[in-house]
Image (cartoon, rainbow, N blue to C red; front, side, top):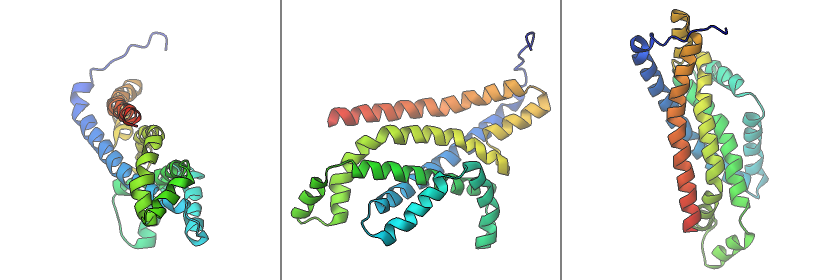
Length: 222
């Protein structure tokens, strides 16, 4: 390997494949991010409930998806969804569902930690002003908790971008899958993977910068 010569002459012919794969990766990221954040918020609030019949099932969900491998979840759901629902969905949407459920469990813990980190007195003050529990949560607790949750949420979104590559195992033609396919055709596996790395960096660097700027703005405004 010491005299290995890099060759990227295959790039012009395969550029459209990578572009389509990048768009698929962005689609998976966007839908998974939205769904997992919504799941995380709802389940995170459920984890703070004082009612055991609310807290127990959501805790079971969180533990199931946090303590088992994501790759296993992607494969299992790909085969289970048609069996359980009788509906055949695309591999792409099967991957989105698996990623959403997995990251929703992690976001739930982040939301739970952000909510419980605030003083109990703020709940009591809101109640004393005649606000309902939901109103206190929406107008008092969550706006403050979001500031504390931004760094871990941003880190999780970056991880989500990278984990979209795992859906290649069920045949989704995202960046990693296309890289492997092009590498098999051109016998340039190292170069194809390096080229895919550039796309992942192009997605994650702006995402990380945006989250950091938003966090700094929240700190200044506080």
